[in-house]
Length: 257
Image 1 (tube, rainbow, N blue to C red):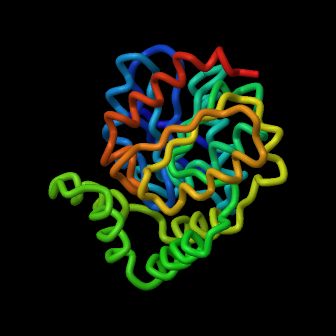
Image 2: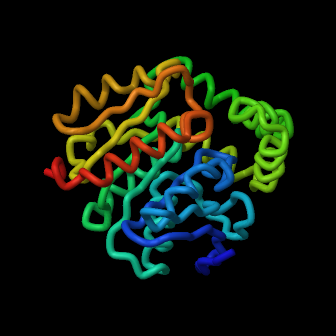
């Protein structure tokens, strides 16, 4: 597996395919394994799936875990790979990194895809979910990994793969990633987004109420609501997810301004 060497350690990533580069950004703890079904997109695009620092096989550890520093880490990956522009696909809190990157480095951003994304934690339920995650990282990460993996798949082998991968995460990083996601907000800067944006939500996901924020702050973006699924769209409805992502990227020139 390829390695991106940084000053503070090595980042492991998967890379396959050619075409427009897409970097997939995972939520706290999960690592790259959550994007198993997005590997199929390498038939049309250059797919890049890293274990962000403090996750999975990566030995790199951020001294200060923050959404801003993760965005800078993504830039280092892009520079390391010699890429000019990339599309960013952030799942759940990984979407915070994607948004921060697009706002900080607009000239390096071709498009943004957020699955279950939010500009700011605005609902009590989402706040409580973050606080629960932080509690279990401290007191029982094994339980947390099992709960998250079970929510994503009924396939026993894949569930065990997710659990084992999550338990490789650095606990300090895992905790602070949750905390940073909880307190992060790009709400006041959301109108500055210049890259084409696609929002994907599950019809049964309470997080989809955050769509109202984007409707309030932005005039031009695309939305896809996937039926009969909650938050885990990239895994549980991956065919529909990949199709929506591909259609969006293939037509992004039509709404790039």
